[in-house]
Image (cartoon, rainbow, N blue to C red; front, side):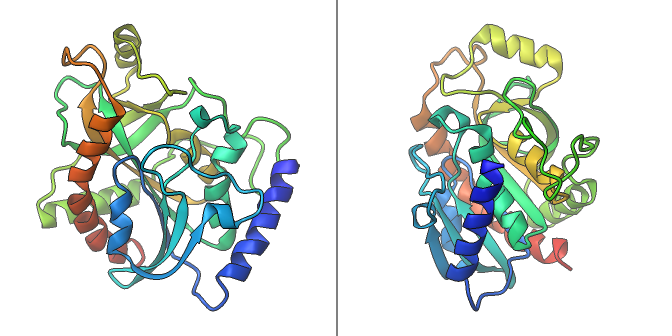
Length: 276
């Protein structure tokens, strides 16, 4: 219940800070190297996470840690310019607190983006992949502990975490703007160390196509609350043991920045379709 009290307190504070603004229709969560996507937003208000008392703040490089409220392609939205991660030392309930807060605010559709390592043999850096499903069993569940009925049921159904209609519409939009998209299964790990080649081989056997350190638990918490979710992974590198090269966060961030114009173009076309 301590988490719920923080959530309610954060909700009251944020509503006060946003007085006069419309409720966003969509929330976009930006992954590593994708922060500049927020610059495409016609910004109306910026709220640093640190301005909300008791709120988790981002410590990962490149994650500015703030909400950007405004419009993109005429659609009212909020961009999470940076997220918090389990590996930063936060509990999973804190990791998903910003997403739960936006859902409580009235946001119904969430776009979760991430930079990831490609596991599938046909993947290459630069590929953009829509999440069809995920594996979250390697990290603690954000739903662990006493269930809060005001947020969702004790045992939420996860048959379709990533909304099939949103995915189908995104593929149509991508074809219209000439962006290649595939679909895949994302596996979340705890981090912060990159995976070993043996772990990647095991994940491939389990059916994973990409791996990263975010997203799956966020989607789980949002589906618990009944929100619509779509996930977009940007393959910034091949996973450990596939390229013969060492992995680094600098490489991830650098490659992530190459995705920014493509992601802006995709979202600019998709948002009006998703909210029609």
